[in-house]
Image (cartoon, rainbow, N blue to C red):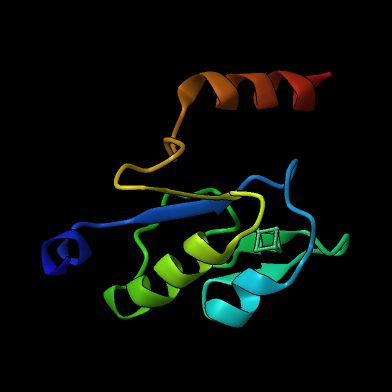
Length: 98
Ligand code: SF4
């Protein structure tokens, strides 16, 4: 168990399946909050899942992950999105130029 906690962990919420039950914010108030529509998201990095969760919050993360009734909390030891994806930047630039 201790070994697992030494690895970096990343999290984000799948808002397509979140039912706004409130459990994750109760379990991990320093990681999860709710947007305007009441859907949970990770406040660590705007729900991108690219910033490692601080070690002192990993127990809270596990509690939230295990307590989510819809398995909407995604946890990985790899970042979910690459911060600089050149192809998406190109698309954005195209839209701005139009
Ligand atoms: S515990 Fe799961 S379903 Fe409930 S608010 Fe959090 S992410 Fe949504």
